[in-house]
Image 1 (cartoon, chains in turn cyan, brown):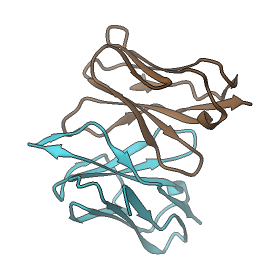
Image 2 (tube, rainbow over the protein chains, first blue to last red):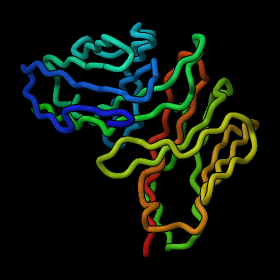
Image 3 (cartoon, each protein chain N blue to C red):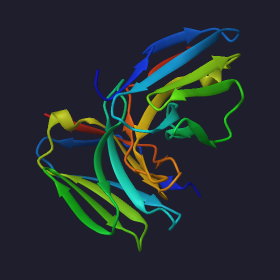
Image 4 (cartoon, one colour):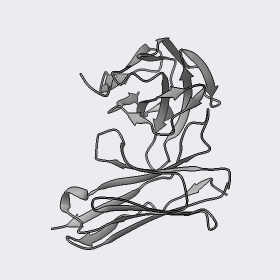
Length: 116
Length: 111
C-alpha cells in the first residue's frame, strides 16, 4: 500500500449507530488531518494531529471523536450523527519538521458517509 | 466575506484550449498556495505548490500568484479530456494551520 488509505470507502449508518473511520498513511509523515467535504461547500478542516497530539479542533461537534494512536494511523469515531453529517470525509497527512508543518498535504480517497 | 472565493463553474472548453482557473482570498496572512485536482469519487491530488508571487510551471500547468491583488491562477495549456475534474485552490498561513479551500471549479474538456 502506498500513500494515504482510508476504510471503509462507503458507509451507511443510522442516527443511533456508532461507527469508526480509519486512515493510514505510508509516507513517513507525522501530521494528520480530517476534513469534511459536503456538496457545494468547500472542504472544511475538522481536526489536526501532530506527533499524535491534537493541535486543532475546528469547532467540531462532540459526536465526532478523533483518535491518533501513532503517527501512521488516524481514526474518526462517529456516534449519534445527524443526516446533515452525510458527506465525504477525507484524511490527509503532511510532514512536520522542527515543529513546522509542511504546507503540502496528501489526501486519501475519502469515506463517503450517508446518515439515515 | 469568505476567506477564499472560487467560481464553481462548470467551465466547459474544447480540447486543446488554454484553461484559466482563478481564486481570490481576503487575508494577506496567507503565504502558501496550492492547487489540487479532484476526480469524481476520489480524494484531492496535489498539482502545484507555490510560496512567492510570480509564476511556477510544471509541464502543461502554470500556477500564478499575485499577493498584492490576493489573486491566484492556474493555467492549463493544450487541455485534454483527461483534465476534466474539479480544481480546488487551497491556501494556508503555514505552521499549525490546516488548508483553507475554495469551493472548487468543475472543468469539462470537450473532445
